[in-house]
Amino acid sequence: MAPLKSLAKEYPIIDTNFQSFCASHTIFSVEDFLLHDLDALIAFADNDHTCSHTLKQLLSIIDSQQPPLLNGLQLLEDAKQNKHVLPTGFEGIDALLGGGLSEGQLTELVGPSSSGKTQACLLSASTVSKHKSSVIYLDTSNSFSPQHIANLVGQTSGYVYNNQADHRYIQEVLDRIICYSVFDLYQMFDVLHQLKMNLKCQIGKSDCHVRLLIVDSISSLITPILGGSGPQGHAMMISAGILLKKLAHEHNIAVLVTNHVVGGEGGTSKPALGESWKSVPHVRLLLSRDYGSNVSNISILKHPSMASGKTASWTMYSLDDKM
Image (cartoon, rainbow, N blue to C red; front, side, top):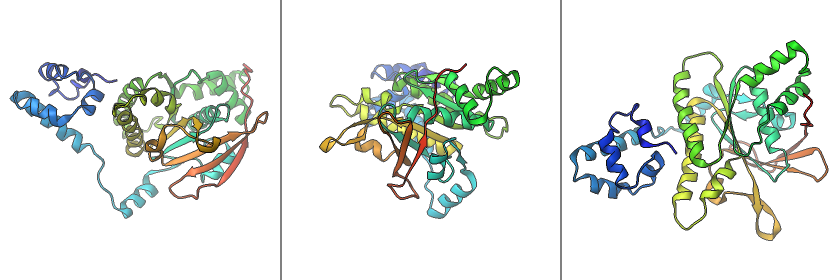
C-alpha cells in the first residue's frame, strides 16, 4: 500500500500539513484516500483553506489521468498501429489466440491446481525474454523457479546448461525476467505504482523494453480482502483490475494473470473472484488437465474477437530439475 508521503516528491502539494490532515481522518495511503468518502473529506477541508485547495488540485489530477474517450475508428487504428502479439511458446495456445498474448490486453488463465497455469506463465516469460524483451513476474506463492525457466529454455531451444556458451545464453534470458515476491494486494499496488513510474522513463528508449507483466496468481492476492460485509475489498479488487489494464493499454504491455476455480451450482467449477471481476479481463482462458495425463486442454471463455468455446491442447513439459 503506497503511503501518501511517497508521492510528495512527484506532487509537492502533498506536504506535511496535508498529510497530517489526512492522518486525522485515518488516511495514510493512496488506497485509503481513494476509498474514503471524498464528499465528506471536502466538507471537512472547507475549514482549512490550504487543505481545501490541495484536495481540489489532487482531485483535478485524478480526473486528468482518466483515459480519454475514443471512438470506434480510433480504437481500431490504435489496435493496428500500437499493439502486437507475443508468442507464449505453446503452439496450441498461440494458434488458438492467433499468435499469442496481445499487447494492451489483460489475459486471464483460469484453472484448478496442476492444470498448467504456472507452466504457461514460466514458458511465456522465457519466450518473451528470449526475444530480448523484459518481463515483470509477480510471484504470489513461491512458484517462480529459475531452474524451471532454464529447463524450459533448454527443452524448447535445445540449449544445454552445462555448456559454457549455452549457459551464458540461459543466464541472459533469466536476467531479463525481473521477479518480485508479492504476498498481499498492498504489495502488488506498491510494485505496480513503481513499475508505472519506471515505464514512463523507458518511453523513447530502445533497450530491452518491458513487454510482459505476469501475476501468478491474482486470486491469491484478492480473495483474502473480499471477506466481510463492507465494500472496501470489492473496490480494491476493481482498482487492481483497472490499474493492470491501464498499464497494459498505456505502455503496450501484455498482462497475464492466473485465477483458480471454485465450486459452482450443480457441482461444476467456475472462476473465482465473482461476477464483478468477470468483466475485467479482455481474454479469459480455461485450463484443464485429465488426472495422470501430461496433456493440458485450453478453451476460450471470453475474447473480444473470437467465439467462446474454441479449444486447443498442449503437452506439458517436464519441469524436473536437470541442472
